Image (cartoon, rainbow, N blue to C red; front, side, top):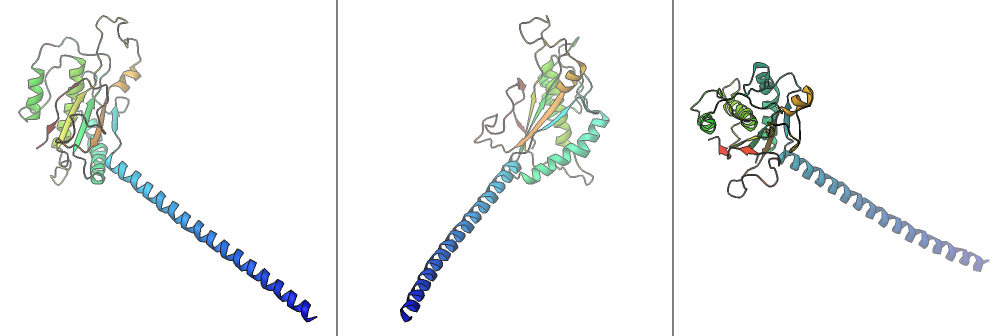
Length: 251
């Protein structure tokens, strides 16, 4: 009987050891899984931070088109009152918010698009001279004729540039002073005067399409004049930009 009891005791001890080893293995696996979960959580958090940092340093581009209740009138580059209200109430606050997040952002691309109507019956003008008079504040308004569709696109970009450059809030503070460099561009399409099939024929299109074509696009980005080319490699003007003024400082 003592032998049986001893045998049972040995079996119990053996099973207890097996259970202890199994429990220890489970605890080890549990700790491994826990550590792995912590690694995954930390990795996800790092990725989220990287994504947020990228978004902060690369604000989404802004597009304003002619389908909205405000925009330039066809063939014009003047900013009308309801357009000014949009700039004051929506666009400028968004730019200010983006600049607060993107501390390195110091440049703004402004791309002016036009429809296929083009410039007609325009006399020759000192277009480039007039544009630089605006840049140097020698001219108060953009009140001169344009000679081509690309000119009109640039004039619209210049109108937005002048308005944003000189805008001050109710406390007389220039809220966009963080922007040191401005890059107005034109994306006005070539107009085929003979309406041939040599290039894309856009003469039989809808008014709605024309409204969508008449638009302004804006990009904020970080520009380093010592390292970057005129068109930044990471935040660059689209390939359709065909006419531009060299980037100039707002200072």
